[in-house]
Image 1 (cartoon, rainbow, N blue to C red):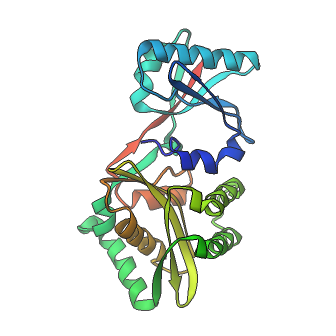
Image 2 (cartoon, helix red, strand yellow):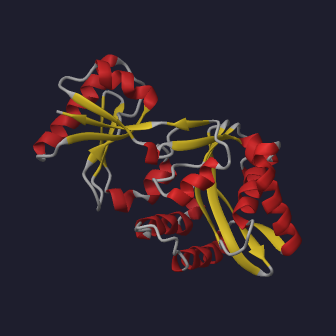
Length: 275
């Protein structure tokens, strides 16, 4: 269920992370050599057995050793920790990666916004509806240019005071939009008073689970973020049980926003150093 482990996410971030991979004993070994930060490996991908896991880890270790790199695994799901703890030769150090842990919600919660815990969300939407005229538009090739404009304006207006470089994310978003017709994604835009002011892109992974890859809106329009999230989940993602809104990256404003929707759980992730 980790947000990194689907094709769209790997595709949109491929130029930043410079992925390399190989297959051994029906397991995919995926490595990242990002433009910023240290190289790392993901947990082996496939149906785990002790033998297949150890073979994969040894192959990844050899790959890193040949390049003179320290072996680090990142974005490791909690469910896989027992394999690292029980079947690794050598010393390991495990650190919880809160910033990259995913927020998981019930679809019905994001759609219906029922109860006291969503009172403020309903107020945001009601105030938006009272203040603005809107149109919900399904994203398709006709409107890709409009989504790109919304994206560009969002980054131009970004001034939340937090010291983060949003440029890699901007490039990743453009990869999704420019290749939208080739990806198995769903998307939507919101036109406010005649101008497109928000867009979002997500997809359904299998039948019970969805992930939202992108959500951008004009923050000067109060309630717009709440409105596009609710409408998009209702119209496009309602067939599933769970919705993954991905991680907060340690950004305070994102953490507040994602927490305010009352996740039912997190996909906890860890960094593992191996000597």
